[in-house]
Amino acid sequence: MALFHSSSTSLFLLIHIALLSTLSLAADPTVSYDFKLSYITVSPLGVPQKVIAVNGQFPGPLVNATTNNNVVINVRNDLDENLLMTWPGIQMRRNSWQDGVLGTNCPIPPNWDWTYSFQLKDQIGSFFYYPSLNLQRASGGFGPFVINNRAIIQIPFAQPDGDFVLLIGDWYTRNHSALRADLDSGKDLGMPDGVLINGKGPYRYNTTLVPDGLPYETIKVDPGKTYRFRVHNVGTSTSLNFRIQGHNLLLVETEGHYTVQQNFSSFDIHVGQSCSFLVTMDQNATSDYYIVASARFVNESLWQKVTGVGILQYSNSKGSATGPLPEAPSDIYNQWSAMNQPKAIRQNTTASGARPNPQGSFHYGSINVTDTYVLRSLPPSTIDGKLRATLNGISFVNPDTPMRLADLNQVKGSYKLDFPSEPLNRPLRRDTSVINATYKGFIEVILQNNDTKMQSFHMNGYSFFVVGMDWGIWSENSRGSYNKWDSISRCTIEVYPGGWTAVLASLDNVGIWNLRVENLDRWYLGQETYMKITNPEENGETEMAPPDNVLFCGALASKQKDLGHKDSAGSILQGNPNLFFTVLMAVCAAVLVFS
Image 1 (cartoon, helix red, strand yellow):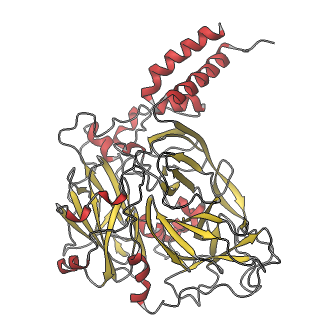
Image 2 (cartoon, one colour):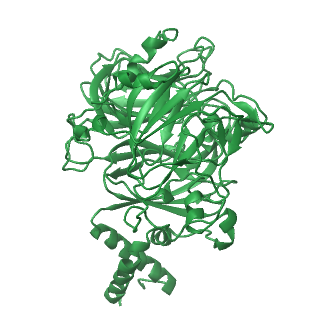
Image 3 (cartoon, helix red, strand yellow):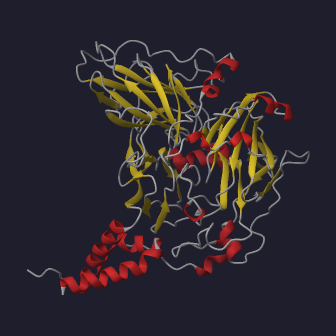
């Protein structure tokens, strides 16, 4: 039997052989994935509905990598609308071309492939990915993203006996298109229909609230062992309280930074946030135990159905879980008490993160602030006849041509560098207004929530130090309450309604980076902006050039070539132009071997 059946098959196999050998010889290993996003029908709450699956899975598969790995993900769009995948918390050092939001990337059209290629430079921790356009995350497409420590870096706790991912989030039985139509018509999304845990509905803890026959999540464990639970709020707009009946949650990590280890009986996880807990199986297993994620900071008596329930099952369990759920915190009417929990989160300054040096070696409290931005959010208002959400009175309009692409191709008027540093006394407006940030600056951002709902804010390309949080209106005197020693560093932070949160960030990552609310309704309605950070002495070392497979749209649409479907080897090569000549030489060597 012939080894190869055709010259094209031979070349395809040789490319794969060469590519694998090239990647294995690279200084930093590469992990590769193929993602196909498509619709499937599931019934997590008993109602058949169309959801977005990744490789036929809902939720999507785990991306599992290690510090400094190169990650290559070929994305196939089998949806009926444009797509972008974003990777919040992954800092994309020097490489905002891979960020997956409309201000930096043209969307992937239906029936097209596009390959993301980026390095996990100096990062560890628990994150998740999702589609960033048009409320698509409300229909799925999300999955976990874990960055493991390198073997030479010791984690600040004993190696767990196992590792579980829990994707929790509020859920509507209306898909994202219907939710989008509601917002476009000026309606509120209303109360969610439930909460999912790993894409599954609640265990039937209550025969009135929960219909019979729903699939639910079961976590199987052994007595006496300790497990790591990575919990992510992937929902649309609802903060959730997470708890496991009869078990303490030892908080050890938030979005890539190790925390001072503290036990909690329950923990609030806001939209877009990720946390790691160590949970020891120290109970007597007279029955299974409830895993609960319930709506927080709402009228909980009316929102009882917005509760996700799974099961923690010991290998020696003596029966099913019964009885009432463990109670949620009772501080809903005591706003000061509710804020104590996030204020208690501190960075473990002696632990090593992605590098051997302690996390506390960056003395942020002694650095002079170069710029201050006070970003005020308000309840949605009508602008030009449409319901819109704003920051500093501006509802963001995504540019037709992504901003950095417009810069490099001399497209004028794509955006304005005039985002105000504080709220202005002027009419609300729609605009493509961007923060003109300073490279190597050290900025203070005050997130002032004058809306009526809890909000989460995220900064792409960075993590920031959460130095202050309080009720009322921020003033310069508020700086006296800042934590300048061991504030947690993370990338998504809650801002209480009627309160403020202050963060500090060191602007050392060149690019254009999205700053947004993670609550999908407010984000869709325009509550976002971008920071433009350029090096005036750019020589190619602080910002990568656009990848060879960059997509063109808007004013540059005529430059776009049809990409269509590609095999994964071709996609990886296209997304990694630096590999081309190495791969070519390896192909030639492989040809000699097989000839």
